[in-house]
Length: 306
Length: 128
Image (tube, rainbow over all chains, first blue to last red; front, side, top):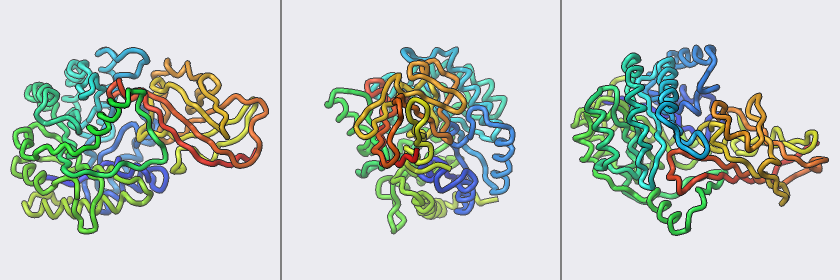
């Protein structure tokens, strides 16, 4: 069975502008979703040391709105120190700190976004020993650690193979799939008050990376079938839902089919990444949930709300 | 609560030896202070950068250079940073064209494309 959730990332433009944390949680509950995902560095006031009053309030809000905390998304900032990358000894306490806070807040999945060491986004090699040394804590808390497979990383790649090598050895490590890898149609750019300049690369490299980052990856959802036993969470990425309640960029019919038929048990956690106009996210996520409910209903695979 | 724009209306004012502007985190998450490499403030065409811009994050205040060692402090997502520029006499009251460029390192972007600079611009009113 699959449950529907929402990553509060979706409310990016509205959070703390038109919506408080409680407004976001109330919105998730109002659309009938059951799972809630947060970005630790964004949604936890005072991260990584929230007050006990904040933690108590979090639990009260989650209970009031009958939500289940799913994934706690965090970062392993391997470039934290200027001029060099973190050692394993420095990285382990960061991951352990996030496991502890995730557990305190009731989450059962932790996604550490890993620093990279190459143009094709190979993670910093410290990841493996860092995760292995944090695993006892994950086991103690019943948490699964899951790095994110995100465009432009392919499902059939050394990056994924290396993760699978560890996932086969422990049930406390698995994969988080971002469905943006299945994007099969061109999309528009993102919108922001700010313009971002990424380094000072030669123009040819800048153009190549820009192309790589926005082009449809066109991964075949069927490739998920063999991976599903190791998939612990899914980001249901989208940029726009039409008035016909279809996603013009991501083939959710095929994605839901393979997840259900391969026995995926977990969340589809909406990750709206389209235009950040105020008040837009609530409407867009609801549209996506209508579509996802329709697709899941065809398989009788939607977990009923409690 | 915050204004949607990176450059906040509240907090733009003259102080002893210069002026300050409140800037909300331009990223979608808070930023560890040591990841910050500095800020450039351009007001009506005049730029203040490097050590001429002082950072206040919560209760702590840093020069641009000192940020590199602040591995345990953060620019919280929920709390604007106060950038203080050195300008004896401050700014004239009235409307100013303010541009803020913030530079910091992202760990999950190839190093060839780093650091990242976000550039925000807005007309903001200064009362005094």
